[in-house]
Image (cartoon, rainbow, N blue to C red; front, side, top):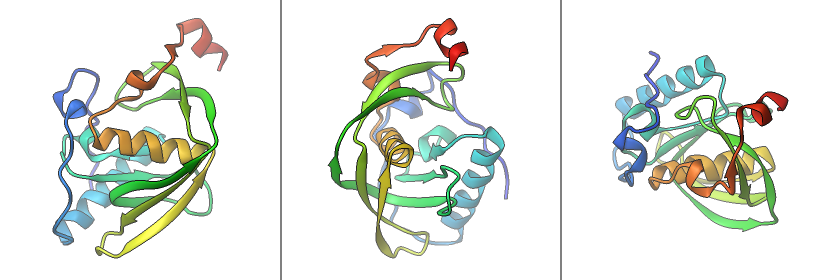
Length: 158
């Protein structure tokens, strides 16, 4: 396992639509393990493959609950409801936060590291993280969804 470099604002990988994963092998497992280590080191709640320069439909989420690291391969949101609006940031945009509206509840269909299909429900922060990371796989960053960006003073208050 290794730490991967997180690409920052301006990197073209953040604007590209990712390709589906077709091979579920040791290389994929290694990428997922590296992503989990990188996420932990960065103290984030989610990380998508384009954030480490890989244009594949892979993301992970860890909101610190009993689910631990949730690995999502080829994910898609199949249900959503409710609304939440709040501050959101991104590991690829350090010290930048914006006010973003997301669904309060989502259900995601994805595959695990072995290619088995599953669904996972998310509420609140987990729903926000699922949406944020899946956006990355479609070349969309949170700043594009933000109603407005927060000033440094507003960020300090958080």
